[in-house]
Length: 486
Image 1 (cartoon, helix red, strand yellow):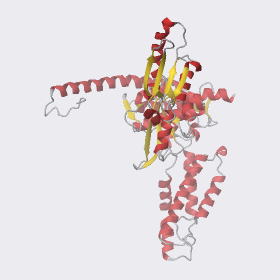
Image 2: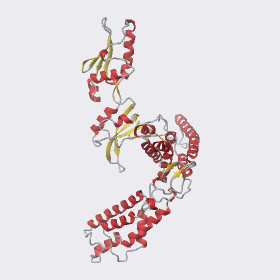
Image 3: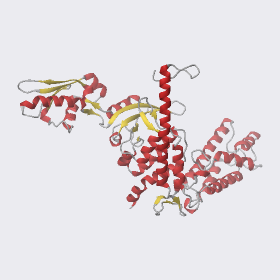
Image 4: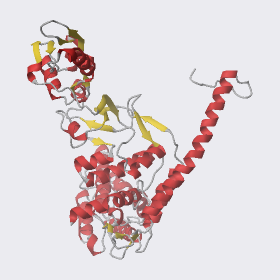
């Protein structure tokens, strides 16, 4: 079934298996041949777009005509080649700290208290201003976080051993406190050496002026693109909700396509632990047509006044919440295709409506009624017209435990989704870059380009330095930003 080949060539394929195996093989070959052409052309266009970008002596990234694309390369001016830590960090602080502790022993010096460690760190960093050849705020924050985490770990260890925090490492301390200080404490000399090493190594990693980062960035995005699959779909949280990935998705992003193949709005909720709340928000976003909630749409031919009768199904209207004959009447009157006025649509009771034709010509009355009958089932009575469907998605943490509920909305119109009651507008994202630009502006579109390229590559288990993606996103959006600045 579905082309599964159970036998090997050795045990012998059945006729059906042979056919399906040949089919799969052919598709694989065609896929490879088409992919080389697609990725090759993509790489060429990337190179042509980025080739003239380089770092100038004032740390800015400019093109051949001197236009500024980035004020500082990658927000921190670091060279991606020289990065050590995970995620493109300049230094692997844990490794460096262990090295300093091993090469520069305490030799009976007093251990610093957590407060003194932070004070020394702040004194050292306060003189390091990025504008005067110091280090970036991002790097300072990274150092602070490293020491804060280390201090937390020290305190928890000392508490577990029931030691007095203020006496650890002092000359009058007990044997246990001295041992604890030797194993986990840090002296003033060690901290000084560690901070000096960090800063000197940080300065050696700053990108040189004249580096042709445009060409390097184009290569760094284009080359892994050749390793990607051509036809990959991944199910966003729920089966049957496909998300385009691989080469087609990268092409969509770089081409800034107006109509992407799978637009999905990841909607975060204000009450994210409540499944019932998520279902209510889903009901207010998802499109509902009259055909889904109507029990019957009938033509009544009477000699005095022929008309249409719409009967609503009570069970279905309760399920979709907030649909009544009054809301249906409003939807009919607001629909531009069904040109009816309020006197033509009458509410009989909470489940029944009568619709009268507008024309006075008796010969055309029946035709008009039939036209109305064919249009009414497609009339949208609730939700957003551009949304195909919404799915409640339980989000899991990395360890597989439940974290929260969110909605995956298949379709466009980010603005209406953001305005829906119960939606957390600050954290809601769309994968349609042009729509993000229209709704939230060019800065949001730039961020979206970076996030989408990163997500696509990470799904293929490829890690690219964020600085290359930032450069591409900036090249795509800097002209709009320049107009705004002027």
